[in-house]
Length: 117
Image (cartoon, rainbow, N blue to C red; front, side, top):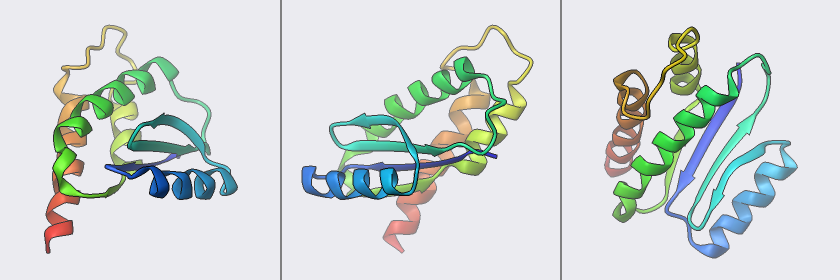
């Protein structure tokens, strides 16, 4: 099972610290943009990279909508691996597919709710 971690709404200084941390822990930075890092630690290389790319597009578009909530740390390991399992046989996927977007949205909302407790 691959491990996926998302950290969003980062300042430049904080982002540099997380980049160093993930690289020292042998993570691959699959998204490394202005205020967001999506890191992946590969344990199982037997995944469809095209499917993973669609999931990443969904994550990037969704997380931009949650900009005003401070730094968000979301462990997406369970969600992404579950999505990859459920769409394994599909060849015609879209970023609007609820099997992809729903679990990601739930994980983001849960992270925001946990932060406010």
